[in-house]
Length: 148
Ligand SMILES: Cc1cc2nc3c(=O)[nH]c(=O)nc-3n(C[C@H](O)[C@H](O)[C@H](O)COP(=O)(O)O)c2cc1C
Image 1 (cartoon, protein in one colour):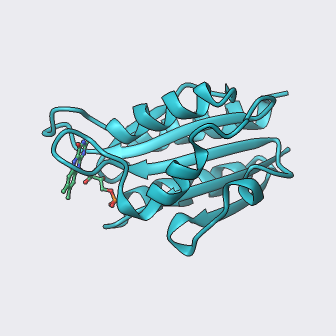
Image 2: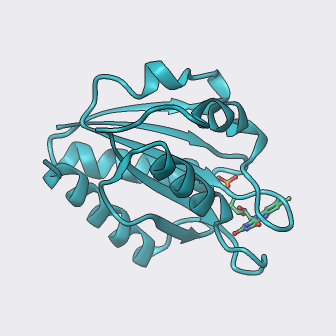
């Protein structure tokens, strides 16, 4: 099985979560490709050639927004046909904001509206991954590896 991951991270928490997911998938003999959204990954190139697709983002704005680093990707996804694609969403956030991990909810809504199927429940992580979050990331990797 293969997984492509696109992420955005400003201070490193989401990047760390993505690196942990990449390692966990590789430990399960999965093929993994990771893309930083700030490098300008195109939606049609990203959603091609893998079994699973993961979108990972931190949350920005007082009421929760998609960060600037991944907003072009987000905008291009609006109305895109993702039927038949298996996706998962993860994000880091801060529970002191009114909408914890808002970008996770925003992406989950858009991806499913585009017809994608959730391969795993969305994963929300408080700031940098702690032991509990690391265990959940490993569970996510296992779910993705087992998805058919
Ligand atoms: C300007 C700003 C707005 C934020 N808004 C939210 C928010 O609405 N919800 C949330 O859960 N976290 C919010 N956060 C917290 C970040 O999402 C959190 O620190 C995250 O782990 C940063 O990820 P990164 O290290 O990958 O950049 C905000 C942080 C900043 C700086």
